[in-house]
Length: 395
Image 1 (spheres, rainbow, N blue to C red):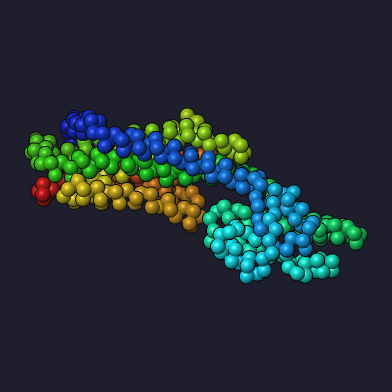
Image 2: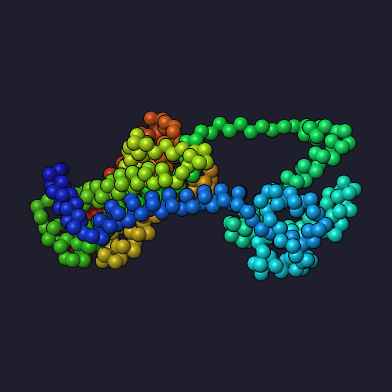
């Protein structure tokens, strides 16, 4: 194999695409920088909103609140202000459906009588379960406050009757949380694997298309294939150039994610991001073997197309294939195991998650992940080389 020729093609493609503004923006700016910024911004917003939901003052409508003044005072002590209304059942339903209130609390007519008899005193909380997240958070907060009030009354009633409240709790469960700040953060930062995989693939998207379908459309591919070098070796140089841009995109994306994670403020919530220099390097090393099969796959797909636009349509769809196994991780509650390390992209996800959790994956798992990915990349590269041996490749 003429390695010198392969590197000559690699150098040509690499330098030519450095002058392509579209490639630079997509490979080195849009995905690697904008993606982590958006991710950190959304995470910070979500966490701040969740904190505000539990602490900020909220207002709910209460129908016939005069029937349960102590309950209303308790709600007020928990930051839940009440707004008096005289809704009946139909009015409360209509008010919630019309979005005039996110929740309506109706005190039933027999509330005081049942309360006095120590029977369960019923209250009705009207909500819309199809409402957005803020409405559901409000429902949980109001319901939790009412249940807390009920538990307090139950404890007081037992004490009045001379019964130890602990007698009603024959079994006490204490939850022992063995998680660490790093492992708790990994649950939140696990979404980074989707971002990193997609940003890495986007890094080589336009180069893979332009160096194959693009050259065919411009008419320069025929001249290139008439050189003394074997066609397969020319293509290997193109795949190598695509892989180099994907590697650059991977490095920039992981580094940007590490920087962005420090602005989320995980420490305020008892979490800590394990994204120091060594963790960043480990993630890059573990993710790198996925580059070769992805670059070769995009090249194979682009070889069947006739124009840049057609190739862009198909390859843009194909880059979703490596991210597809990641969709089943949470759905099937998959856990890291040696057989699953033979699935490209899924194995890289497990390895990256283990780094984020501060764990050290087994050597066999690392070897399985890298070996299968590189072997698949070599196979797809060979297939791409064989496809370019066809005369039909010139159109």
